[in-house]
Image 1 (cartoon, protein in one colour):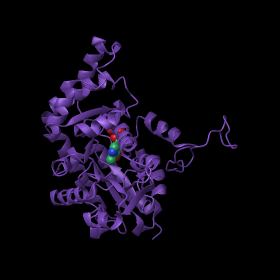
Image 2 (image 1 turned 120 degrees about the horizontal axis):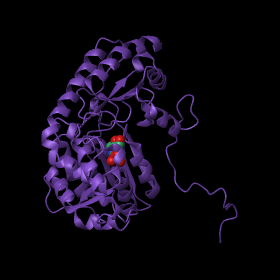
Image 3 (image 1 turned 30 degrees about the vertical axis):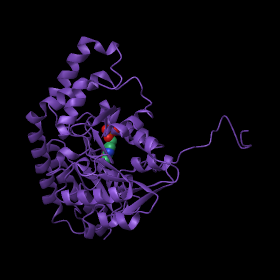
Image 4 (image 1 turned 90 degrees about the vertical axis):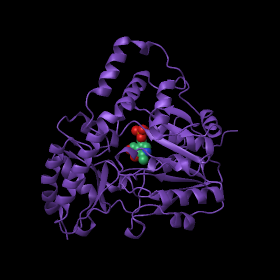
Length: 391
Ligand SMILES: Cc1ncc(COP(=O)(O)O)c(C=O)c1O
């Protein structure tokens, strides 16, 4: 029997989602993003996307489109060549690859396939909250651990994990490097997380979406095989965010369990797969240039921020293609800052997108864009601080 409040025209929301207040002047976030997207003069520092790729990947996709092979369905689990290239990129053997429409879909599938209603999941705050929203749909609780502190180097530490877990903890989410701060885990930290996971039967979800921007990167899988889910994406270093491809790597029993939850049973966009193959094959030719530009861009931002009173970079250098600028000492509301900067054709993100507790303190900017555009930001930002400063 349906409950008496059942209303076919107004279904109850079965799932909770973090609500965001739409930006000033907009009824909803989608209209805002569309306006940003349509504005060709907007400098794109708000989505951690990469605008530094040359034509190598796009040329491969144009060739694939000309062949018109897209009229066939792809092999449902993806091209074996692509899957092998992904494993080689990580240096993994004997693991399974599941390709999905972006890392996002894999994150959802992992939660759906592996979490039970009595479980809890540990995630840092700040962090990437889409993951928490997904976990919330299937688990009893998401434990957001506050990490915006210098003493724990702005990241979840094994000590913080121990303090925040209990016998119902089933999964720990390690975003490495971390969106939004750019903090990354050391090899010793990963080993300690692995020990905790083995002692307590936990899954370690290692989201390495930004790994290729890091000065050093280590694979959790090497220390906790059989319990690690490595989430990867083609959206960032490969500059393919709009094409929607990513996935999850894990042992065969785990991927088999996740495969049973798959919705997109007819496979991942075939043109995108050609682009991803070209991207992986040519990576050694372009990755050095992109990384160098990102390091130089964040150096310029650091130099610009240093003399500004009340404003600082919690993590520098960042190991991702983004960083956080703390505005609290200048008494500036990050929302006002991002609105002000949109007026100067600079699209950035206020902190509330990545933190419940600390979102009113910082602005997040990504810097994988041409250096000339970073110079525009460096010119406008100090003026913006002086215009908005209340302290
Ligand atoms: C940590 C993290 N994981 C996953 C994603 C989404 O990746 P994709 O575009 O492959 O869905 C993002 C996007 O910003 C992210 O920051």
